[in-house]
Length: 119
Image 1 (cartoon, rainbow, N blue to C red):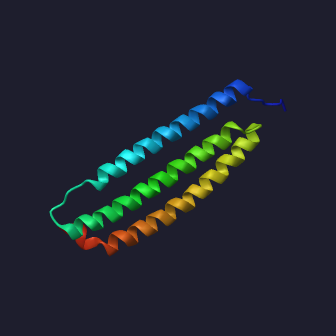
Image 2 (cartoon, rainbow, N blue to C red):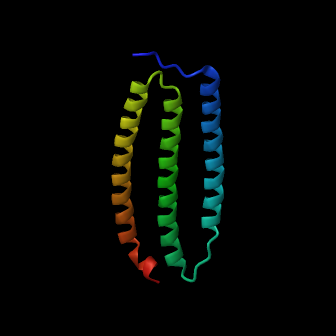
Image 3 (tube, rainbow, N blue to C red):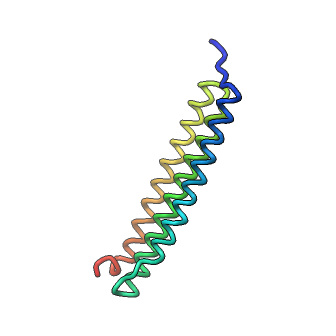
């Protein structure tokens, strides 16, 4: 088997790219959260309930994207294809578990706040 090495320049470029993408996403999330916070609604209670669900959804999205960035950061540091494959398997298993938990929590939150979504 041949030794697979990623040149340092390519690794550095990939790491900078991942970090720049993370910063851009954090800026997007900040703006999106501010925008969601300024939504006016006819019913104060319904607005509060929708905000709770929106905040939870934004939180999940941020967690999932950060997990993807962390995975990308680890992936660009992989020493060989086998390590990259193992990292991918770990990431997929963790994300499937996280998505299942998030869906369950979000379902419970929506059920709890259901009257706010009917108005």
